[in-house]
Image (cartoon, rainbow, N blue to C red; front, side):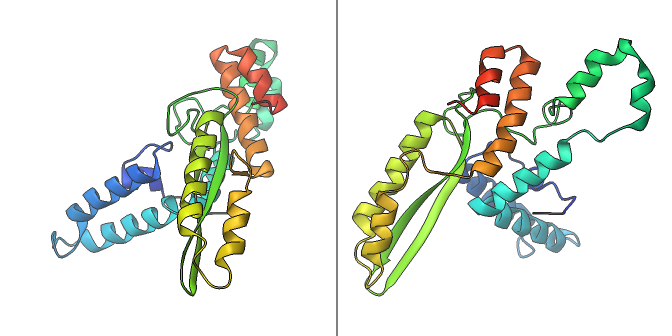
Length: 225
């Protein structure tokens, strides 16, 4: 779990729901601006170091999930001992704070609420990874793309990953065939981390309550797609 005050999404100038491709485009654009060879200013080296650090986290699916979870934890409201004496007049606002979306969804984009591919916003959203395999003779590489997707887009992304494995994964000796079979038999909606998504769905449900969408809020709290 990350322990940093650095705002990686702000450094790369992208939204938290940005796709990996959008992260690549933003990095290349900013690298041309801040690279010391092209911009020999006194701050260019430091800016480039921060840019590389942010890109290294946001472009790696596992690191990005851990960083997003860290942002989610940081967005949780902190307990305030004096709040108990505020009386019934503050009951509604206190209830909103305790629901888990205070700060996370009120002007803070740390917790995305839309599918990063199609923009859909409902209780089917999940953080998922889509494993694939690429092999060549004695080299077999296992990789995985991931992010926040709705149920339909998860199946599409998983189908794409399986197609890559089907055409490119068999040819490594001796592990290509085994890793490829494992990829082809992966869940149709990707590999979903139950613990990470349980925390995310709690906040997503709070977001839907905040926006008045009680049907989706109920599904989110029940873990329904």
